Length: 201
Image (cartoon, rainbow, N blue to C red):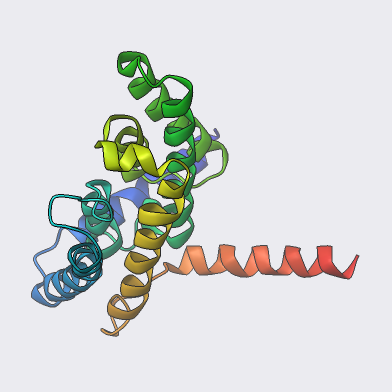
């Protein structure tokens, strides 16, 4: 990687970290509201749809996602592509590894997480909570394991979609907050143009 690009990436990361860690009560307020309603919706559905002891919809990795998509909204790791793609890819890998190695958790757990990291890197959907999503598929409760590939659709896809909708609403109410980030919006437009070109062919 050229030195100029490294310096640019460093400056951008430092700016994002500085901006997101400032004491700004309005920022804190909207981060709280977004997280509360996003995760609160999943929790409400969990306790309305299932018995209290069957925690199926509410997986731990969603808590980590809330930190990113409501608290560090300018981070590249918090953007919609990363949130959705990271969770779904990791869930697919986690379930697959669990089915291939159901009795050897000591191999299955690190293998699922490690493969998830690589696939997220390759697909440019790196989202740290995705590692936990893969791990839960391997080490979760019997209810989670019994879901099989349905785990990918619910709780993972449905839960990530709920968090995304809440992020799109609450992260854009205040005029100084924008989600997705300007860079992510540019990327979305770029992909849209590419798709149009492919369709025209």
